Length: 153
Image (tube, rainbow, N blue to C red; front, side, top):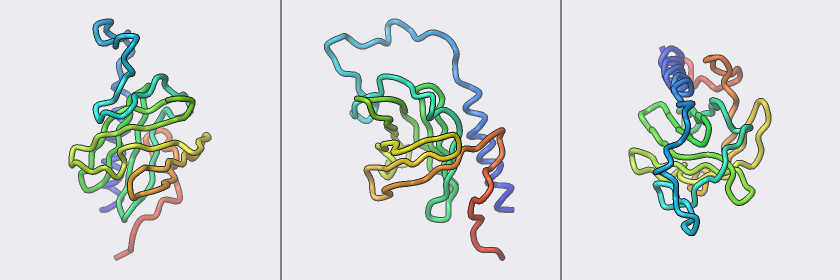
């Protein structure tokens, strides 16, 4: 039962990656050259997307599955239990950064610095109490192998 709910949640998160627009950005949304761009949370905004971050990434934390989805400069986190966060991901001052705002007001995953990323794993250090989390790439709408499933009943 738990695996079915988890798979359904991940499938929904993965479906979001297919919904990104491919059109050009509206010229009226650009900022003036003298103003530094900022995210919705007031943090510095990412200035470029990072191809290495693109895709769907999954981890477990506190017994919950957490899906981090990056498409272009947009990012979202979806966790079992209802946590939903959205924001930006990409390069900023030469670093790969993630800035999120969560609907429940949580700051646990507000700002994250990507410590390392390769074809299979991504390590992110969050500025909140979570510290470092290691995510595994989810391919083709399937959960990666090796994820803990929780206590068996």
